[in-house]
Image (tube, rainbow, N blue to C red):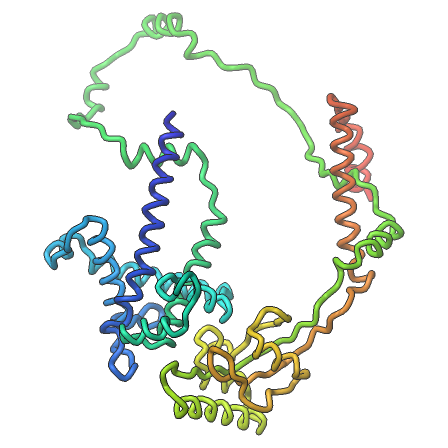
Length: 428
């Protein structure tokens, strides 16, 4: 009964957390950037620094207003400055921003990133940017313009939030909580006891107490159960891995599997790609379009003249997720990028740079391919070890199931097995 009640409690807690997330997405459309950006799109001074990363004052204002909006909806009343101060919302906003910065920094160290495609799908899924259930770019730009939000800055914040969510999910997925831990936490948080107490020094009192041997013996006789010890045994055992009994998989069996499952060993062609992105302001007109293209043209010219492409990406690229890594996108295959980018990438050979800027919905790109993994079928010699391991595991599982049916009380003479196997190996 208690465990069931607690699970219902945590289900309710999940609904509250879901409401917080929805409130964040909703209010970010109306409060993000208000005060965080000047009219010309330049960020204001930083509020704080976390391991060298600046937290802009605008981000703090956005977080603070999100909290105010959340509590306003939760309590169904306006939150006055006095109430906000009593609730400690300023400290909560700063704490949340510091924690977010630490999570993002750890995600970067772990190599966790969000691709442009994932970012695009996330933005397109926000209901505020949809008409009749479909994403509207015109509505998207109009909403941002109305709230004085630069699209590039908005996308940076959304990408940042996705990275944070991915990092938090990675941590949470590795945590398992038992029923006992849930019960203990529940009792710790909600159990209350009213108590009166007094502190008494026991040593002086104990010094005045004497116990005779006769009293002790009488106590033992009347409380024998307290002094009984359960029967105990000394045992020896050996832990045996199922692999020790597994028969080696012949090469012929592995080769037969390879021929029958050839599709498992096909590898698509993949290219190690880097890029430099210069965004095009959505309302900038032809002049802004030309400026962005010219900037990428200049980057291509400098790269072909001998300058390091990675250094140019760090200097010029506006893709905040990849610029610190020199624009590195890793190995990419077909179907992983927008069509315009994919077509340009797969037209290049190893060491080549795109001859001209590539236009995508994100802006103009300079693209370089630094390595190529040719597609084809993995040779049998490279796949043989994994095939044998897979077949051996399947055969062990089938044998275990059959043994459980045929010999449910099977007992292994481990002493004989140790003598014949472990000791023999030790002597060898």
